[in-house]
Image (cartoon, rainbow, N blue to C red; front, side, top):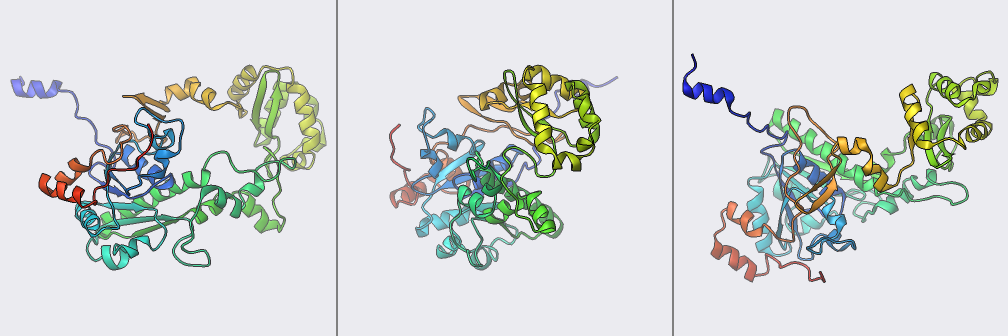
Length: 415
């Protein structure tokens, strides 16, 4: 028979599983989107993230309306949950001293200043930080990197979309090259930075050594050109605007139904046969022009006309429901509200709403190390005293730092 203590232990609820990055401490000096998104994803996986903002604050706090009850823009709240925030003027010696104190317990530093800024402050990775903190992983996010013809230049998502060919393949002939409607370069750069940090953490676990992670918007933007860059490299032909169509697959485009538009993505002959049988287009299966994907690409205009006629009087919801269950990829072209109101989005928990905070749920799920949604996005400097006390500062010292302007009060703005 079990003793009382053993019996109690057997029926005790299991301990909460730790996040995959539990125990990892991140100092986040980044602003706007790519850096803050990266560190928010690290926080979602259990890392402790301290957001260090300059006297003017993260620029996205002011990129509204809409704004929350504290006056911070919704844009800011989208990429800053789960963090504690302090304000710090790194242009002052006292501010740099505080940062160096915080780095004593840190595993990762993320910054996206213009290249050379950290060196100007005496915080260059190679000469100042690496010798002092050899285990530190230093992630620098920039537009173009430090060297090369564009080294040190500022980078912005839309400019990189233009420079790196993304706009040239987005849009149609009538409207011309078009910016992709989300900051896709910034977004993927955040994921690229996260991947680089995780690789560096794995390398450190084997070697004990930290390193610099170099991530640029320029490289990320060029990496998005699949398959367009490969098509050009193999043929020498410049990719052209195709609207919503695909350069290598047909039918792979949007089509109008009775009550809205759908996107139809037929990627092989088997799916094409299933689609034609369902849509009453059996005649296309006997037409040599549509026998294979190569032939369908050569005769895409005729194929499109036949499909448009067949779908014009059908309900998009019924059509997508039936085709997906037949194994033919098809989905309604939803608005943003419609996307988050989908039953499957609710099932997957992709809209987070709690404690006055609303945001997009995490896209990465681990079975043994659960993702967590941490504290709401912080106000400017909200956790300054708390973080500094943990770093060993007493109240008198903190008051002195505040009096010296090392701990700024934050940007003045209407609420």
